[in-house]
Length: 623
Image (cartoon, rainbow, N blue to C red; front, side):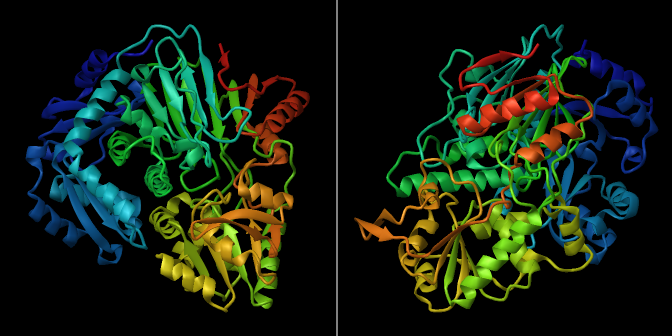
């Protein structure tokens, strides 16, 4: 049985040294913060704290009482004297409510020092708790704006996080049953959303849209009550998983949103762009920009492998999914060892140009919900796919043509960029449709990239994202210049399925020239223009200067399989084989109807466990 807030605080007070002048004990989500006026306990190892953490299985920190902190001007001077100049301090911000100083540096490792010694000294001298963040190599308006907003909202966040912590530690008796309800993304690709319930808790996993349509998750069913949701967990920042999360805040949800830091930043970028595109097309957005801000204000970010209580009877861990920057496999431990649910969302169990393979580092998993996007397909090996990409690109350049690659803003675009840069490609590569903003966010969080890419950036001094071949397209006139130019080039443009965005604008004017190439490198959803052209349509209706006209597809059309951020059938099987304990149940989602069913049948034959491909609106009892 879980300890209540009162019992936890009581045990903490009993274990604290007598000379520790405690002024307050507060929650920050699942963390417990002890504020003290005793200077000698700041910036030093605290053996009693390790014992408390071990005993209570809670994350506990000691911070200076705000009254103890040196004035910001004095503290900043101290920091600049202590931290090495090579750390490249860009900005220092103060959050007095938390007694917290946030330092943005080009090289955080140097600022922290070997074993954290420099940082501990800075804490002792300045009498502030200190966090060091990496500053983006490329200026990012999104990262800058979000960080500034969170600094401004620190008073709100302190109160909010304490409220969340008290809910988490409100105590519970017994978990008699567990069930999930499929609200979207089952036997289809798009609008991923599922509800995980116990008698004590209601947690929503993802809440996306179906790109190119007005289909949203089924939130008008009896199982879903926005006022009873305890937490929302977001796997990653593609719109089919995150696109409707602000809607929840627009219509009454005011609880926490859990995800990684890059996922938070990318979610804002994509949701803002989603609203803007709808407005340009004369549509009505399902939520406002205010709702996006409300989501960010309540966002609790976690590192990979960090364990966090999120309700009285649920504990969350996010693990690398290998899909896009910050993407996570969601592991939820329910009750006291009662049941473990793993929701893979989108994952890649193969090393790519950007990421290490998806992590399977969890001790137990009774129920796993796996994606089925390519559940009946076997993709070419990664190195073959990269060679095919370079061959098609180089052949187009030799013809003095242009190659248009429709991409998702996050994921495939950066993957292709790294492949081109690593192969010493010399022709210009134009980035259009918020790709530059997404690129800037990638430069802010290199620690979420593969070990190989980190080695390249930090040890070898080569950052492929900063190659001179990449050019930003920032206006319609610049886009026209790219189209009208006779020089060969590569164009990376959104949207990835040709459902809108600048990729459509390029296609209108490049499609009829045989020298040019249209290259697909990602999944093309059923019913999209991308899928139609992929199937062989030689003429498509498009709007040019306000009129619908037929556009002939005379250009070369190619698809490179194997660059996808999704696992194929072989990779899914290998992933499930690597899990330490065989799941009791495997549920298949995020795939077209036939692919979900076929994968479920294949996995049943192989693993001899219960497998199922639920339909939307089905509720399944897990225990």
